[in-house]
Length: 304
Length: 293
Image (cartoon, rainbow over all chains, first blue to last red):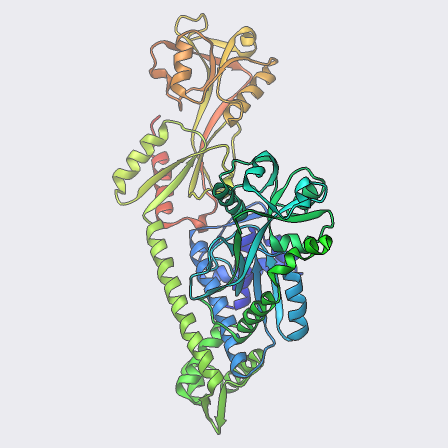
């Protein structure tokens, strides 16, 4: 049995298609088929139900899938630990990021300059899953609470800011009384997103039942809507900062300073390699350079 | 990386001697040396310190060995789970019912008497579920088109008849379907294969049926016929309408039509032990005419 066979098997299971895996790996479908048949012959059983072009794991296949993933992971971990033992850093770490989409490219860029020998494989996902189920070394996500496990660390306390169009009357003021938000139209996140739940909590704290103009989780869309003065919105400070839209102004709301936490987590089932350690430390240091005060810089600048 | 090679590595690590290891593995000594060298190249480090014919695991080799042991555990556990699964699958069969002819009830009942340890799951086909995601051993279909597939058993071939109220002028007669052009029909939901075929049959007879009511429930359909709401085109035997005293039948002279109830499976190689037993049982029952409608 080849580990390569297992790797192809895992991908075929995930994509339900031999053809897609062949395209992904730039080899022929028949080559993938051969690998899968070899595996089935060695185990003495079929692993898929085949219906036309689609393939679906049967009950045996589901069992093999779980173990195949762990075996491939173990082999990668072995290689990584051996590299670490020999002070080689030429390997790949996979990062899933579920948050800070605008900051991540900057981290990756400067990390690659400093550590060209470490290959970063970065994927972005919309919805949070358990890190144990995600096949990655490191995951970045946001949460409403501080991280509280041995294999995660909160690396940034991100202020949530109220953003308004520069043409909005609030734009001329420093601080808004919560009462006045009742009259406003909001660009609001959907309730299924993590940020939506956070926004809901903020509104609850302010005692406001918001009037909702548009619901959207898509930051660039939200920014445009706010800039066009269609509504105002609570947004993560970093999102506001990195969109850097000159038509948008952040304002403070009296008596509240809402925040969320950016957390970095790693897979405690896997070998914690030096490269993973370096990446985590690097990300923590990078986030420290982002000062909260910068978020309000332009606003203050304009006043001067 | 080849998992077999990892096993060779493990034996070499334990015996600390290339010749001894190659003897134990029943492979030629140069072959073993070559495999170990290949592994070292792939991992880009040496795994052994070599002193003459003696080989000693170095720190890299020790790391690899600890992972190989964990991988062995993983394989062992996988084999155990696969065995468990095989046992479980050998104790049950699943039949996907794309039609619900009553003969399946009798068949399952008789099979269970012969094999009380094998449980039978009957999965009712739902048109909204993607078939690819359903797991089953057999499927049961009812169709006016006769399927000829190598992994198929024809359980029953029957006439298609018109079910009419008992005092209808056609009761017990033989008619051309074309004569039913002005009748009201009770049908199955239009996405049922059975209904599609029924409408096709009417088209062949030269008319489009006026369907006044659609239902997926046989009892409702029977009740509606008995209440003279309409008539229905049904297979003669498999639905067992004949038990209803308020319903009579008319044979269809033309167009020529039959209904076939068939049991099929994906391939002989994939059948579990329980599946093979069921298949053989059905074949034997057919041969001895035991499948009663």
